[in-house]
Length: 190
Image (cartoon, rainbow, N blue to C red):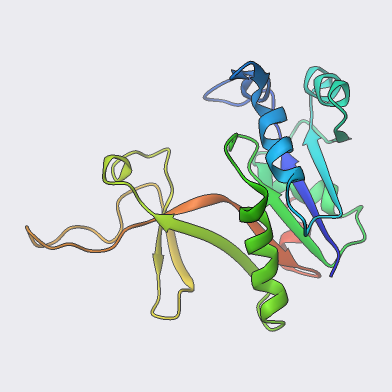
């Protein structure tokens, strides 16, 4: 199964312009993400998708493969779709450009989930949400069904705490997903 990772890295982010090039422990954030993704054993390639020459130049400077995209994309998913439309791979992995602590084994786990069940078109990962992040809108929470399929993603706490003293289990989304092609995600806003 051939899998390719795509890292959308938009320079003109609304909340944090220049975020891909923000320094994290002495390196641009996008480089940290790329290095973590490159540790994945299941990826044949890792491509950084950007609309900005500054990001492209910085990425090429540390050896990354870069795909230039249109500047009118509203989301990283749209940017990834533009790049994925040009790729010949069975699986595409979308790796968020602002996940500098991503590790290769996490990427491999999403790809492995597809390899383990040929009937599953898409896989993503979650981990237990830390209590201090439950009300943080920057942390995406996930509700799972009894078979561990994602039912709902939200920036708010889900499920809502209806009874004082109740202890529901909260899950946080990890910023990536893998999907088997062809899939609807290949055609988002092209």
